[in-house]
Length: 521
Ligand code: CA
Image 1 (cartoon, helix red, strand yellow):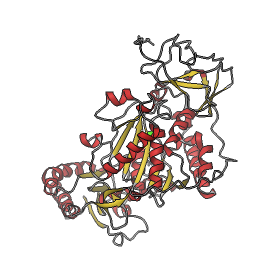
Image 2: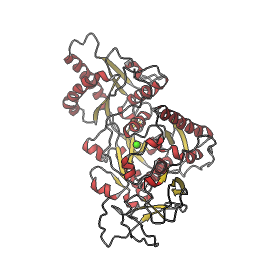
Image 3: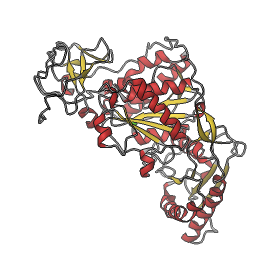
Image 4: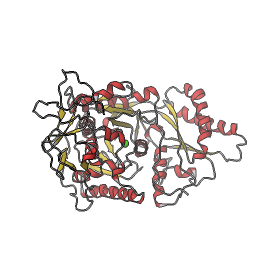
């Protein structure tokens, strides 16, 4: 690795998070060279890149390496003070056992209520509130995706300009529907995900489904299970390309366009109204994490999460493999033993899922995570759970279930960005907040995605992609509380349509990606 020449004026800085920690991370952009002397006298024995760990004391072979006040690994060799605690020098500990965890032992008192915060949203007949006004065209099988794309172009070019109150038209396409073991027990996950996507709050109850006709997932099954759609004020329309009255491709396109137009006319009547902040359902996620994620962006988002919970809103955090190694901290925070046991149930399900696939949680960290200073999944998880703030955990969802409760909810999902985002959408999130250290241009068409950078260098390099810079926490220019309030206020403005996220300004949207743990035939 080449060692950049540092300007002499730059003050070397490191961040230690907990008084028990025997490592700290280097703050300075591009890292610091051997011989660098910190204010407390610690001297680097070698180059340490930005975000990577330095040993603060001599750490003996096999001794614990402590960050966040928790053991993140063991030293494979002696690490004298001032060493680069690099990934290959750290042995990863076993994941905490799911037996004998403390259940709901912390008995966290509710945080003081936060009153008077509102946003301008689209209220639906089922009580949910939208933050965008979108026509979604659901599909029951991949076979129709190409046809729908042709129709969508016509709808956007010819119809959308006539209905200015409608923000967008979105096709909910996917690889599911046929060639799948539709009755396998775990097929319930992709199926309920599609059902819940169709009734997403931003789609206004105007459900439209394009099917083929012969597929295993018949279009009717996308209607919410056990729900009287009409009673919820949902208007449903289904068409099948194999319908014998459709005698040409042109006729299929005409029918899709006509169905879309009747729905656009209804959606165009939707108007924003003042709604309490308690109507927000905010999904939290991280992607492309680095060692700053758990120091800057995630704690600031955790502070914003506490503000949202205090305002009566729903906040979902997810990503099973990124909370698994911190599960002993989360079960203590459950509001009651049932919720704690539900957390353990979701962890056990995922342990089993990974084992059957011949993998374990060590498969999670990416080359980018490691380059950013994260030694292993334990260190990544401890930084990841900082997003959840300090509230009690009041509920747990299995993948793709619609959220029922207010407060802080653990919504079990894979950590993969677009899979997690799709499942949180199905759960009903109306704003998404995404923290990133390495950087990703991630966005979703269905909801606004606010991106928070962990480092100033990234926020500056990608100033037209990053909405909030939490790197100012590392440099001491802002506090966790300052950035937390900035995120909270931006959530209200974005939910109201008053401000656009960078991703929405560019029309930068990733595809929805279903989680299908069931067999394909
Ligand atoms: Ca993720």
